[in-house]
Image 1 (cartoon, helix red, strand yellow):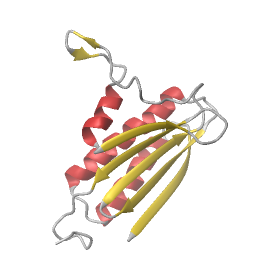
Image 2: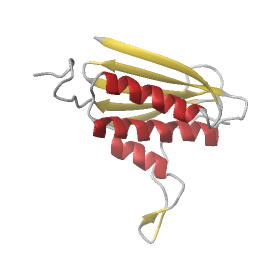
Image 3: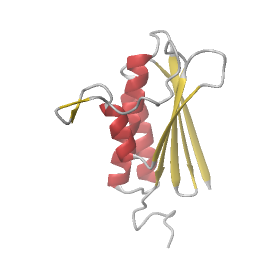
Length: 147
């Protein structure tokens, strides 16, 4: 079974809780464990916050959620930083062994998800796709739990 949800969202702070709520509710209905949902929710929040911080004010963005084979893949697609972000410089600077504020979201996404990838959008314009992948953990009463 494969499920897919695509959201076209305005680049507005109110869109982040909407995306988070829809993803959380869908995962709860599938009976994914609470800890797994929390990890996905926080990583999604960080990816969406990056769009708000780094895209042009007029840009919309898209969140695509795909669940297949017990894996949740989230794609957050923005259409417009001044140039796409590759993730090459995704390790934050540190001061006294502590990470500086810039880059913490990237570290969180990497810590919470099984994989995190950044790539430029396929179209001619600037933009970035952030792909977040997590193996789902099922509650014992989930109809999708593998026995």
